[in-house]
Every structure is written in C-alpha cells, then in structure tokens.
Image (tube, rainbow, N blue to C red; front, side, top):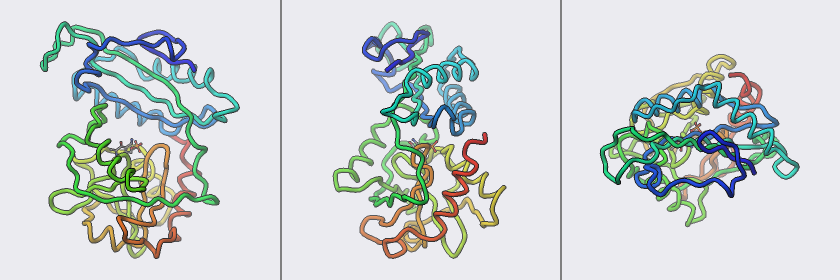
Length: 286
Ligand code: PMP
C-alpha cells in the first residue's frame, strides 16, 4: 500500500514522523476523508474546501493547492486499487502543524506542516436494494465548543462512539444542554416527520458535513421534498417517522432504533430509498 508523506510516495511501512510532531503531541491538525469508487470521487472539491477553511482557522499554511493534492490522491488511488478492495477506497488526508523546537502550547509556525495521505478499503456504495439498518445510542454531547473544525483531536468523538459500540450500537447521536440534537459522533443527523425532511442547522457545535451539504443540495434541486434546517429536540428525534445518519462513507444511513426506541416500528421507512436513490444518482456531480 502506497502512502504520501511530506512530498514523497512510499510504502506504508516506510512512513515515519517525529514524536515531536504537534499532531502527535497536541492533536494539532485537521483531516478529511474523501470516498472514491473506481477512481471517481464523491465531493472532492467541497471536502478540500472545508479542509482549507479548517487550516485557515488554525493558522496552518499547507503550501499545496487543491489541484496538487488531487494529483497526489489520483496517483494513490491508481496504485492502491486492486481486486481485494474493488476500487472502493477512502482517501484520508491529514495535515498537522509539524515539529517545533519544544513542546509548548503556543505555536510559531516555524516548522513545516506534516502532510500525510493514505487510502483504505471501504464498502461499495450503499444500495437501496441491500439496505443497512443502523441501531444507534443517544447521549449528551460532552465535546468541546468548536466541533465545526474537523480536527484530528477526536477523543471526545472517540469516547462517544465507543460508548455506543461497546453496547452493540453502530453510532451515538448527541444532544446539547437544551436537549437539541447536535450530530452523531461521526455523522450528521436527519429526521423525517410528516413528509418534511429536517436536519439541525449548522453552528459551532457540529461539523458541516459534506454529505449533509450535498444531500440538501440534491434534494432542493432534484426533488419536491420540503427540507428544513432547524432545531430538532430529543423528543422530536424519538417521535420521528424516519431517522438517518449521513457521512462520506455511509451516504444516507437509515436508523431503525435510537437507544431502545424503535423508529418506524424498527423498519426502514419509505422516504429513505427515494432519498438514498437520489443521492446515488447525483453524488458524482460536484
Ligand atoms: N460529524 C462528525 C463529527 C464527523 O466526524 C463526520 C465525518 N467524519 C460527519 C459529521 C460527516 O461529515 P461528512 O459528510 O463530511 O463525512
């Protein structure tokens, strides 16, 4: 498996970074995961746009353009596609602040940022004919106040995910102090109620998911569904006709149980196949 580290392509085993890297010491960095199926990306441009906003926010000057990054990703996909992964690859791009003279909270940006890109096998794109039903946990969102940054500091997300995983759940949906849904530990949340598709509106408590963004665009352009970005309370979530998770690799994932409460009697609802179908139809258009 070929990876890219700081300007060079190399076998994964040869990729080494310093333990003084601020990505290792502080989780001081950002990342993206872009899915690619047979060499075709879903949302490459918006994923990279979000990464550049994140880099600006934390004051890292990467020194690579979007098109340079795309060339690197294209080469990794070409080299790493094989019979085993069937050309279904996630491209992981991570930028950390790199090595500075000492471990100290303040940064000087005197070092070079560390750029690491690798690919990993992902499942084929979800199909409405073979749906996966997600069973999710629910708990209070105990992460920090800048969840809009896609940082590699994921301990909060990891703890929330693990809390569900250890109890046999596929994901954990999070709600804030006022009992409003923020997002899930690695996905955004949608509900359907009386034919209206709703998702929490964006703020600093949730990541602006690219799948969320693309799905909203597709629904507004190519369907008659009523779509709302609005507050969703915990009780509205539990009383929803359908609940979905969105993320780059899940696309639109239908949820049939939230922490013991069955959604639509534990069956995937009728709106989901229409919406996942629309997503599949338009997802390769950027
Ligand atoms: N929220 C969080 C916390 C995430 O980690 C992710 C994806 N990893 C998402 C939402 C979904 O974002 P995207 O659709 O861009 O994958």
